[in-house]
Image 1: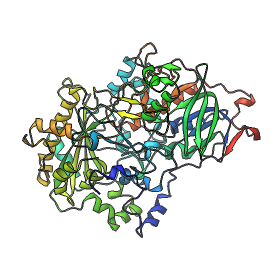
Image 2 (image 1 turned 180 degrees about the horizontal axis):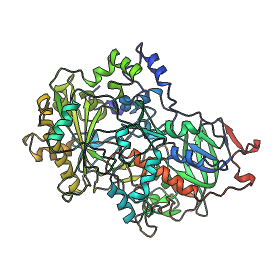
Image 3 (image 1 turned 90 degrees about the horizontal axis):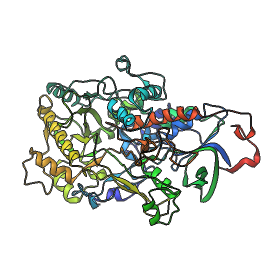
Image 4 (image 1 turned 60 degrees about the vertical axis):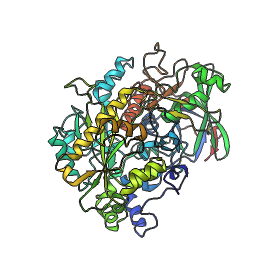
Length: 620
């Protein structure tokens, strides 16, 4: 198998401990935390609310709405309950290319991708209960105050930083007392955040080198974001804390919540410009379920626009291509934003095992089983992040526009997950096979480029066409080059510079530049970038009179009654950093908005526990 092939071939979920004698003991230890809820045994013909997608936002809304006893909810998820081993933080990538992943790739990129097969990026998305919160790297980042104030300024009234901060606090159960003490955090919420206990051998030197360069250590979710973030992760006692665990497990015994996995919604039903229900496939049959109050689409920034367009809500020019009747001509699928960028890699010169060797080491596995520490507790190898400003940010302004992730890695990661051409892998990474590496992944966290999500057919099982259009705006490339130069400074400043050396191999097509030349880094970024899986913005909320918006500030689809979108697609602009926590916050705030419209009555049609036999659609 060549370096180009692995991401083309689906595989089953497996980890380095599969097939070992320690697997049963590891599974038993993980069972101390329930990671997935009990699912429904029957589905009714109608509900007050039908939620499409049990991911980072949909799980939140399902939990919060069913806190009201008179409301009943059906939560439909295309994927299945996740494997138990997804709870081990370091195994985050093992879900890629499996049945728990939508298995997407981008369209060929115009401004980067010279070193990628087909100029396409691998684009995993979670297809299971908890969605991408069950396969992400768990880094807990809220973004920057300016992000939310900008949303409000653009017309998303009610979404300023001061207005969303209470919802960030509501979702949070922060286990690090020093961070809670700054007043920006809380305890007791559904999602646990804490520093992973694992400390790689290189981490102290990394933090000291950053300090020597003037980058202070701080809580980037607190008063200021700019600096070095010894990151927290969404883990509970060093097991993953997905929204399936945090929100659905506590709600699983509510009689007014039905959770249906392995069911694919194919269409939103619309009558007289009102959403009345959904059509979905389950176990080879097609069904229709009615929504008395609302249909809530939480399928994510790729699948939400696809479903809206298939249902007749989207740009008329796109829908007309497929003879889909236009119910609402709205810019669905426009405004796609994502965080993508290149790596700068360093080889570690002190005698340590590679991260892959550690994961296979029986003593390391036992350390995790008995102490919940060691390499398996690492959030997919993440060590620290730097949030820093480029020259495009006014001096002194706390509004960093690039993020650098330092993590443990190996050439296996590049070979299996990046989608590299064999030429790139063989020239750049193959000479370092078997060696421990530190990677500095860089990205512009306030990208100016905008992409699109469109449909390729009327078949809902055909993947959407995803074009992030990376580096369409040259400023994004400039910012990434500045970020790479920062990585180089950190990696060559003692004490880190005393124990690591930048890899010396150059990317094909860039050999004419000196390895430290900014033009070399520009060339590398145009050759190979990866995504950190933060697509947002494809159903933009804001001022209803703004022709670029799909939703009003209460997340209602313009011109359609009874239909809301609640997921990352609603963001007008992307947040400055990892997007999982902001999307959970969106779920919390949306739930609060929806709850304000609920009026309980004694009518039989508004009773959650309506168990009349003729109201059962089927038994799951």
